Image (cartoon, rainbow, N blue to C red; front, side, top):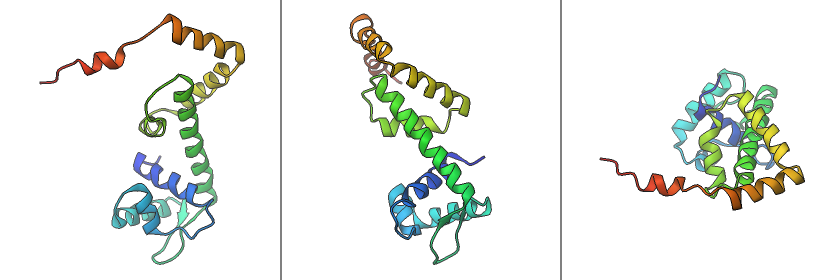
Length: 150
């Protein structure tokens, strides 16, 4: 099992693999806003786990195993972003999904995916929108903002 940090590297490399560019340490470091030495350490770990091939001054390439996991990581992130949009979250969905994705097990992600499909059914979607707009208003954000931390 990969750490959240290594998952982020793998997900970014997976996304870069579709740009038809040579994937280099500097590009990964720039996109993840991390140092090149940190990126090299992560690449060595991913190489040791057979998720990619990496050696100094060569192009970074995902293995079959890395492609499969990269696809799952991107899919997981997309599912969570879709969920946040459907429920009407007004936060930065990409940032929020990133915060959530590493801490939910695969069965929870599957359950969320099923819920998304259910909420996209027109009748259910209409009912949900009526409920969330007319029937229930939460002041959760205001409550959190009013808590004093000493």
